[in-house]
Image (cartoon, rainbow, N blue to C red):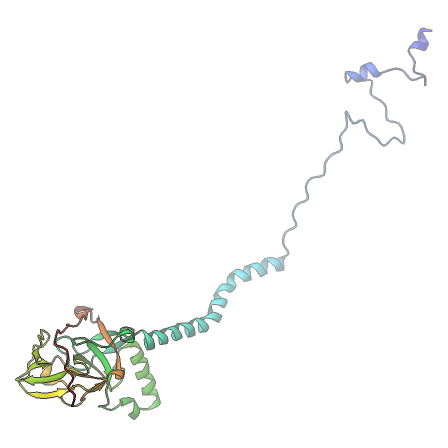
Length: 278
């Protein structure tokens, strides 16, 4: 009977107690049994697959893409230059322009070879005032570009754009002395506007000549150069200048550095012109 107690129903020895403590009583593998002992054997995990290196042609494309920035820049360069030129042209035409001073007619305020900046926005809002330095287009003089060949005109045009040559042989820079309706009289070099002598600290080369009286017509301006003995202005040569011929107001001497500075003008307080009627 004891022998029967030591056997399972199938006649196999009972090894459950030894298996509980990890003893030698492990179940033998049975042919056809594919299930391993989960408590002892564990399936090995395959190592993670290494990432496939990028194909050689892909790496080459990436490298070429980084190096292609220079090529892209040179392809875009003409467009960038065109945009810059258009912006500069608009700025020069409607906002600011650099002018070259070719004579001494405005000495000592402006000297030969000075480059001045002329702004064009102020006179869109108001009229020029007495004492301001103004650039305008006159009818006197000859445009030198008309007598030059194509190459010379191109060079001159570039120089005009950069302000290193006169913008036009008919462009003048003078000081506003009288506006429409003003009566101008010059006696022994002293200037009177509407019967009142004006203070002109900018005149260091006086001219003892006489002029007038004259009245400035409607829509016109009367100009004088600061260098009175050596200036072609409204007294002689230019006459009364239409207000719509004004290019802009001179505000800064840009070059040379020794002469650089603001051009603020001088405000002349004079009585308003009296209008006479028949």
